[in-house]
Length: 465
Ligand SMILES: [Zn+2]
Image (cartoon, rainbow, N blue to C red):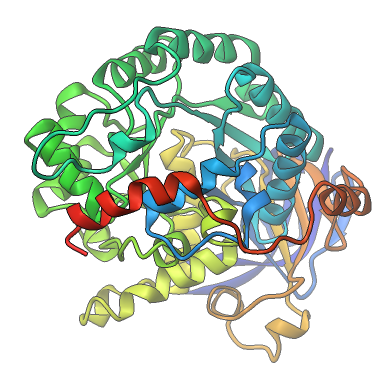
């Protein structure tokens, strides 16, 4: 597991340096020119070495519905998604493999999977995703997606009140499943961590949030959730709590320096101050927000307020890929149209830092991951700067972030273990994966979601459409 990358470009203050990087026992041991060769020699000539990015919010099993979802806003889209959700473990396994592979080949070394659980097979679902991630070797943060209210509760009532069916499982039973999953699978030293991850205020009671806080404190787990992804959720929070969702989450104690919040599109200035004060992390999912018409998160305001921001692909049904470099590109330049003051626009170097160190900080691992620093874990990505998409030669990081890199990732190491070489994942058989994805799916015509049809009239009414 020891190796030395020789003569590689690394990013320094205002340019690049040509250095050698020594990795010993999974840790970056030295970075300097002309080091002794320890372990395997890797030729770094005309290559760029960056810390691995974090795909900080996704839902792996959505891969089965990419490219087919209707042009719906989140609330109706979710109804369609759930009507056709895969309910077999083999599919959970394959889509976790696929998510890991696409993340690795677009510069990611960690994935946060807000994992949709098959009802009645919750622990098996988690075990299956964990197995897939361990086989690939990506650093996995499995965040089992839980809720304790039924889908119709996610839409504001508007005038008059709505009656919702009770959720099929009591809150305490859900929390017991998560605690059991933590006991079985939370192994940070082996590259698998569990997070508590109530889906969001739109489908979760305070009891569920409080139970998650308690588990997070007891087992030292990071916290994850969707937050104010849509205008409807902003309205719903006011109906439900009489204050904003952020104020409420602060009040019950969910926000912290190890809490990552996906989306954060509809926040007020007061909400922004709360996220800064609680040191919460925002996960920006620009492609999903565009695809579902959710809005544009005010990311530059967050950065100016000192909030840590990182990137996610979100599930492949609302993206419809898992290309992290694409999310980073769009998530950076999107804000040039919302904010006139170009001095705050996100530069390629800032985007790289947000995707790597920003992701690590959100997972409470800023001291162990996210930068090329001696003593940190060797979660590294080596880019081939002679790839056609990165030529002719100009600024390597500029080409990587603002360009459209194709086959640019040459090697990837997680914890010092090489899992991509010559642009190919070495730990699993990709041909087998392609065959399995092909045979477990079929070409599909357009389909109709009954649940979306049932709730559409009410949705249009409360949203003034
Ligand atoms: Zn999501």
